[in-house]
Image 1: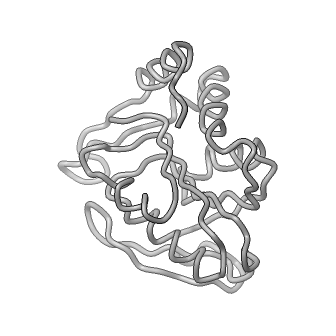
Image 2 (image 1 turned 90 degrees about the horizontal axis):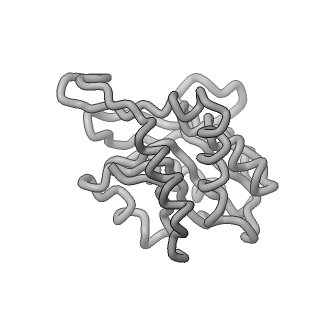
Length: 183
């Protein structure tokens, strides 16, 4: 990845300053990283969207697959900025048509994700996006869903990573992992 300019580094610092930490949510011992302040201010929303798209500009990306639900918030902007379609990857029972499902481990339990069975054509180039990567479990589950439908993962995009949990390291053998911020 190219070196950051002083301006980009300043923007990242500004974004990081505007992320709230909520203790004991959703369970005791978890510190939830709240990105809603980045959505609330027009300039923060635009700056976040601009920097998320930067590493992927000029690449041929057919779809951005956003993970429920916070991956939808910037995922649709990212898809639009990259001239790609958007695919929601959701929790079970939320998609109306036929779906494929995978189970995965969370840092505080287990969960499942689904995708519409007809969402991806074989060979489609897919960028997976979520707001945060912790252990990488949900991103890996999304990878499994996309590959199950014949898609090719071209990269991962996250607003932030919890670097101590090393989730991106688990994905790097699949495709490049770009995190805007590290906490």
